[in-house]
Each structure stands twice: as structure tokens, then as C-alpha cells.
Length: 239
Image (tube, rainbow, N blue to C red; front, side, top):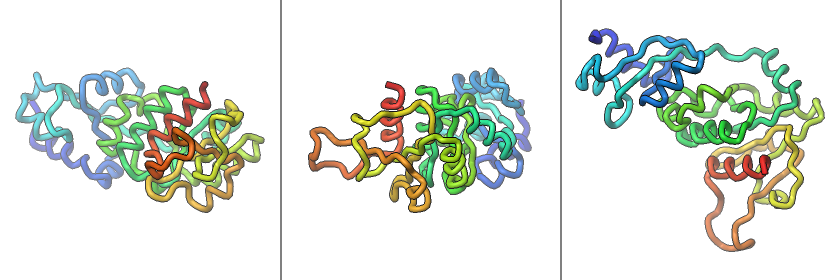
């Protein structure tokens, strides 16, 4: 059984403020719950529809219809400056998200990073919250395998540059990505859905890239969705 107090507590986790205060977030679906249980994340509780009943699950779900399983998971602690320095020192290939605001896009990008073996994702402080229910669902479990660091992006970009690694960025006036040499270390900056990479980060990019349309020069869509652009870019780096 599940008490009214528990239902109220889980329901409250729809709000970012409550997630921040409690340090908890919700995962739904048998696959994601299984991923959470196997991840090493601290599990607060697991609720299954056969145990609590459909009516109770309908009251705690954040989906349009209840799934067979739901877990309340503790949010891991934020990384320290030393953690970030150690990551940069390992000469990784990372993504940097500059003001990505759509939860579905963020979740999809985390999933893309997992598929292509991107070492970590750095996100600006104004990027949408990782533990937003829509973001969590869109990761399809990759949230438990890829680290996302909310941080001062310009500072991180400077760390990569100081370590002798390139900072890549996607721009409409960049060099054709299909003809560029792409290293297996560095930082790949992706911009917001509406404005692209902001001026401060743009100044720190050392290698400007462009994903051309087909046929080249064709009049069509103005730009690619940021998650799609990230997928194409990561595929080119891993070709």
C-alpha cells in the first residue's frame, strides 16, 4: 500500500523547487527503473502497479498514463572544481550546452552522448534542469551513465584551451564539417534552440563547424534542431 502522505510527496516532485529541496527525482517505466536500480544511484523507493494498484499509480505518475513501475531516486551531489579539473586533465571529448532550454532536447542529447561515447556534458546554468521529468524520460536511461555538469561554461572552455585542446562550435558560417579534421579530444559547443551559441562562448571557440544542407546551397530549413545537430556532429567525430 501507499499512504496519502507518500502520494503527496511524490506528486510534489513535479516542481523543480521541490526536487531541489528534497534532492529527489522521479523515474518511470520498467526499463528506466531497472536502469536506476543497476546504476549505483541511491534509490529512495520503488512503486509497482501490482503492489499499489492502478488508482494509486495514476495519482503519482507524471506521464499521460501510468507505467508499471516508478522509482524515486536521490539526485547525486554536484561535482567539485577538482572533479572538473580531473576530467579536463584526462583529455576527454565532451559536449558543452549553451542555454539549451527544451527538456526533450536535453534528454535526447544525453542519450546521443551515451550512444557515441562522449565522456561528459557541461551545461550552462540556464540550461534546462536535468531532472525535469520530460528530460529524464527522453534520456531513456542514459541519465544514469553520462555525467552532466552545470557550470560556468566560459571557464570550462578556457580550461580546455589552456590544456592545449580545441574548442569546437557549430555556426552557419563555419567550415564544412565533412571536410574538417576532427580530433578525439576537446570540447564541442552546441547553442540554444533560438539563438545558437552566445557571444561570450563564440569568442572562445577555436574551430567553427557547419553542417551543410543537401544539396549544398539549397533553400530550405533555416537550421537543424539542436539535438539533431548534436547527433550529426557526434557521428562525424566518431566516424
